[in-house]
Length: 286
Ligand SMILES: [Fe+2]
Ligand SMILES: [Fe+2]
Image (cartoon, rainbow, N blue to C red; front, side, top):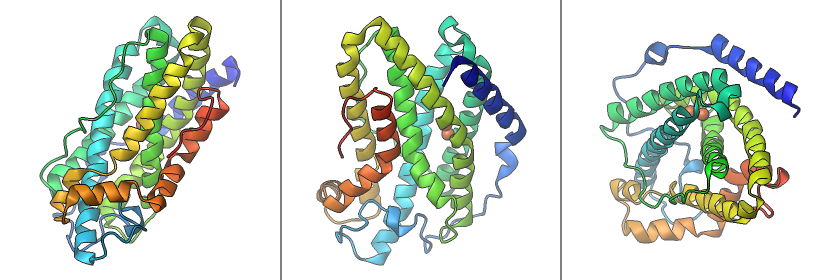
């Protein structure tokens, strides 16, 4: 995309954000409770789906509930990081071209963080803490750090959009859950479009400055993708759902061939993007 097309895209996205602007605090009609008898997540998105490891409906329903808590908690933690990193860059010289859109971006993420957390506290009374295993970032130098940060944001947004776009249309789950997925999907389509263009620019700049770091960065981003997939299998969700031998079940599910296939599907779009832009020399493997 040429410089002028990108500028045009930024103003189009900003305009769309202005038109679509909503008050998150009044947008949803929060029911008094969400029934534990309902499937909070369509069974096909539960982490043991297609593995035959758990068959009892009561346990699966509990897992659907706690994995919804996990998904929404991961949104909260992902958004915190994203807001910190974007806040550090907005109105600095390297990001001057993006100031206007970044304001919408941060504003929308602040709304998202609120409604995901609100759901968790209202209906379960807590959120899950951030997984401790998140891969630490060495300082790669400013230009590569920018790329790594926005790559992480894109991965996070693309994974969750896989779930949001599907469950946002799913009338078998409770209405409030469906509405949250749908609202998030609606805003995220703009963030993903922006993130992809920005990443290509950051990548070109980083390759011009210090091309020797390219492989190291590819390794790191792939490690982050693997971490992100693992975070969908929260040991605490298995414990809370009263699964027998939760850690063994978690490990068996995570490494099951049917699940590896699912991991590839969830990552397909972002993986293809990294390869086609040259950020990856080879695709990430599940
Ligand atoms: Fe978001
Ligand atoms: Fe986003």
